[in-house]
Image (cartoon, rainbow, N blue to C red; front, top):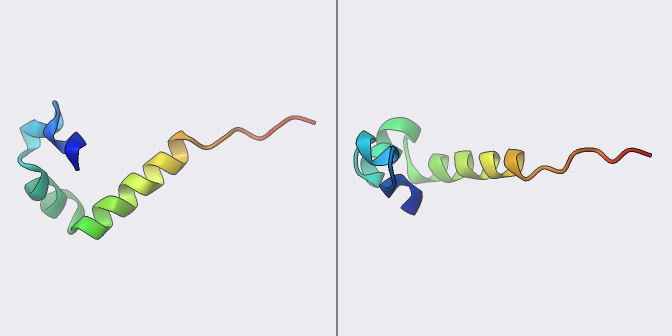
Length: 48
């Protein structure tokens, strides 16, 4: 949740406000972050 205190997210409101208005609840926010991390750090398929 600390990232929500940084620019440009801080312009959207405080972290709790962002989570509630954009994601619905903390569980949904954490799920979205988890999915994003999985996509970012996914390794490309190896060539044979």
